[in-house]
Length: 527
Image (cartoon, rainbow, N blue to C red):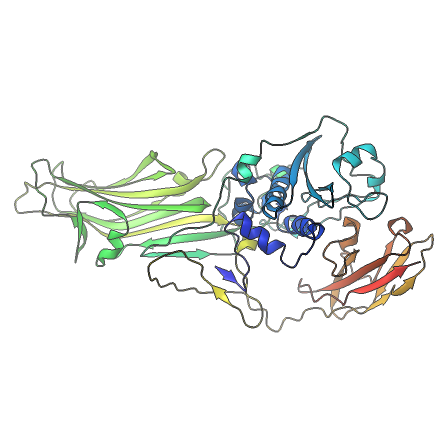
């Protein structure tokens, strides 16, 4: 489903197309991908190596450690027809993208790249190895947020001379991730009669390894391996069988059953001395990580022989990994409810992407008078994990929502949006930029930027760029949330070249935590 032609992240090619829209040069494409990856993920440990695939990473998790960020950037860059690769350096994984006839190191996990001494080109791994001193001027400013447990966390922070890559130790280009980058992950699924899918921005408490309380006990030495997800969402696929509608049965795998006013019953036309064996199988494959679920219903058996039986079982991923959930011990009509959380719980090495619920029924043909066995009702709920930023978002005003499908048959789908209404909550107005503008002298003290104070602003975000649309910052130093309401910013003289045009802009954050519109982009020329 797309909103205003966005959020089709079903393949890595479609993700790349959305990210680089409006870009005209390879540099713009590379920096757009770097910015997108760094801003759409959080630095945390997932343990699922399959999420090296960008599609799985950004649709299901949205968090990972350095290797996952570098892999996502590489996969998206290659999908945008840019040469890209992954480097393993001492204790870290980074990426490089090739454009303008040279390599450029871009690290979306630490939100860092380093300018060469020319103040224009992004350095490569080889250039960093030859000159480890010039990168000490680069800072990565922290991102502050509240996690799922309402703890305030600072994701990354580095200051002058505190973040230096250890390039001179053994390092190599990493090719082992390539099979995961191009595993062909697709965020597609089929909804069949009786099914309904709901996706929520908020998490319900079920996520990867959510029961491993020891893991989520904060460890200051390796916090990224012990934090619960900062941001995650949950969704459900709900199935309700309607035995009165044959289409609800014919769309699923079954044997020797038929529809009746009382439900789905063992086909009475089949008789044998051993009794007739029947089953109904609900199978639910998903491109999402399954984190739990439940099955409930009502079964009935009128006979009381060994051939009269009713039971419910299930499998995860393959039908060899199966378990029995419920067995009706006596004749009569019985309701049942079974939690699937234990069976589908996602822990390392036991990630479920498909499960099936099988209802087994039997009746003895020799019973006199004739008896029946059947399924009166069946409800199956499958819970999965999703990355909230992958979900379509509505904007104020008119929106165009489209459901993309490949079905050759006519279908009906009902889409319902529920949202948090922000009408009446004021955004902070755009600041008015004061100086610099026009021709600006380069003096030893550097350049001071100033703007007007905006009503209700509690913080400002400052950007400085060589790009006329500010598509990417001059350096990570110059894309920063100031985290206070000061209306000035100072940049050292060493960042600027003479006779060069630079562009800058500012936006304000209101007390409600909402960012307002950017100011106009103001150019200035250095002299």
